Image (cartoon, rainbow, N blue to C red; front, side):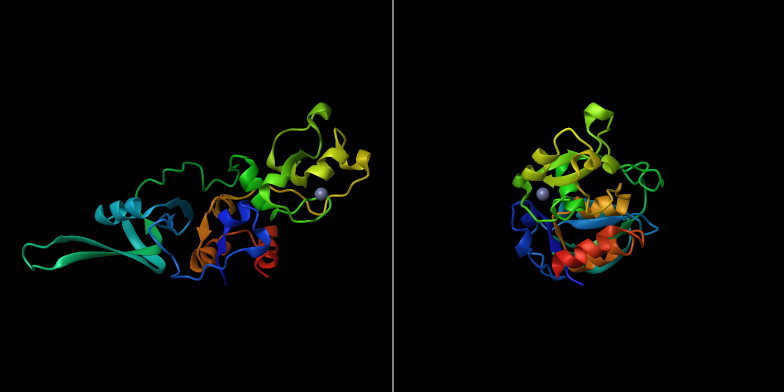
Length: 224
Ligand SMILES: [Zn+2]
């Protein structure tokens, strides 16, 4: 299992996705995956927030691999410097900060970045891959025909296909969708929001996707 550099994909380097092996976190910008006590993915946090959770003894257990070693003050009794080791995945107690994330009817906010990632930067009409700046949000059933701005009515489309389709349904425009649009679950949404997702974080998140999730296949093709 490989990790994935989603920011790189956003910049239009989708065909050259950087493989991010576990333990390859360079610098402190690598984000940590926080889960609840049951292991449900919650959010991405930076090393400072992770350190705070460790200090407040809110970290119940860790998964993944060690990412950072933060050096603290010298212990007056032992004369030794305290070292805090922060893992790539931390399970925490206490409030989640994301009410509703475990509800089955949770609907993540819709924006172009996560939409394009959901569709693996592929135009859902011509099936070609494009960088973000050449993609657009197509409303399958257009606004003018009562279509809504919701996950199940939007797909990633290249400019050319979007123009060609215009204010028509795919049937009216005689254009075919290559995949059915879906609303990401919370775990899928956390993945889609990621920046550099490390291999172990990726594996962890994938295990929380529905078995039927189209993302399993898309991620494999993405990395393949
Ligand atoms: Zn297209």
